[in-house]
Image 1 (cartoon, protein in one colour):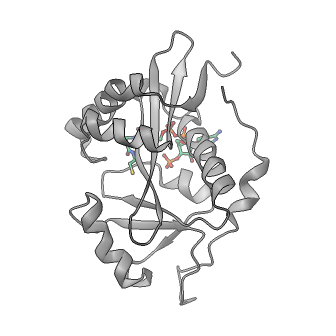
Image 2: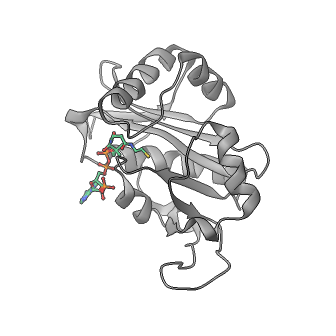
Length: 188
Ligand SMILES: CC(C)(COP(=O)(O)OP(=O)(O)OC[C@H]1O[C@@H](n2cnc3c(N)ncnc32)[C@H](O)[C@@H]1OP(=O)(O)O)[C@@H](O)C(=O)NCCC(=O)NCCS
């Protein structure tokens, strides 16, 4: 195994490990929102939860994509890599894997990543072409929607596939997500 881990879709059997990984991080840093095993199971059932596993099967990283019910925007959610495995590109690879899957189904998909003051991984999103945009650049109906999908506050927005209306400073055009296709992946 070239990189010491493999990335693939989560199965229902992974729900407990994923919830544990995410909730341990929540307890420690509040960088992510807490999760129940049931919620994870529901997300896995919808198809877009990826995990990184070590050779023995241990889950060392997870990443979910959830789809917001009104706007249809896709959110990168519950991104956690075990502390001792960080900085090896695992989160990047999990995200690329899911971006490819979603784009195959929905080429014009819009993605969002929401960060709070404790969240890491902003450079990963930027490398993937996400643009950091201010809340006033987000359509009102989408801003309101975040309160219905489990967030209790507006965090920093990163978006991909959505062209912000204003070209004011810091509101650059979002890169073409399909340009990400050529990246080598380490998948199951
Ligand atoms: C965020 C998190 C999932 C990133 O996982 P990771 O596997 O370490 O991520 P990567 O190795 O892909 O990237 C880590 C950093 O190294 C950099 N990096 C990765 N590979 C690199 C490489 N080959 N060369 C140089 N830099 C590299 C990335 O730019 C990234 O910087 P960032 O953290 O400022 O974005 C992890 O730090 C974590 O679990 N943090 C706690 C939970 C959290 O904050 N989650 C995000 C919630 S929104």
